[in-house]
Image (cartoon, rainbow, N blue to C red; front, side, top):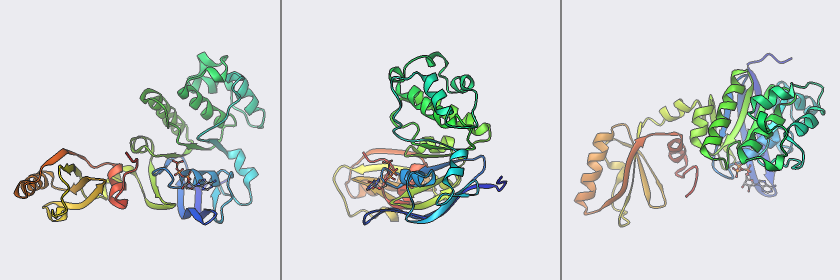
Length: 309
Ligand code: ATP
């Protein structure tokens, strides 16, 4: 039994696909009982990391310890203590919800009560339905139920809410929060900043195979040292404005032709920006202000958005 506070320790994990390094020497630890998020844009290396941790891909370098067991040498032991929901679980479409759960449970010595699990995942009225008739949200809840049949201590969820409608997403968030309340440790990947903010105790932000920040959601935002963001475009492209020189501006980000000014003095920055634009006969369009978010942490560090578009 491992009674250490850190239930996952990742040490210098590396994964290459040919010449391309998808995960480039990342290190982090996950504490027992926390929801830990890997947040980053498409292609950042989140899924590859998760797949190495659950034994689906072999690291090219480094290792990780899950509940004290080494992923490069003790996968059999790790499989007993982890539950895994992957992005595209192919389910036996013709089985019913109840049948597939009993089937999966039969692979393990340690089994939970299937009716209770079905109820927890809000699938009671679907338990006799074939999987192919379920909605996207119901299928996703079933995929999580399948990860829980052996009562694992640690649950890995790969983009659990991608493609779901807002209501189905919230239902899933509630389920994840309940799992945490029961003492489970959860590692999830997501590219939704709101999801990471709501669910995660700590977040590792990943970009291009590396961890670029790791902290609680509120400290990540606080460390920006700018509580507000001012976003706008110029109607005509203008390179002559010194945006960094505007009073209060701590940092300037831009994406395509949209600029984001980070400031700790919103009123002054806004006033000066409008003044500067008028002095130069420039028209500001799509101007908006907002409180800084995790998305801003990402823009701040990389100059790009988490989600393109
Ligand atoms: P997404 O949100 O799109 O799943 P991600 O952060 O999970 O993104 P990964 O799926 O881990 O990212 O992919 C990281 C990088 O590795 C991407 O550039 C991807 O194209 C590449 N990659 C992933 N799997 C393979 C593979 N089997 N062969 C070659 N390249 C791969």
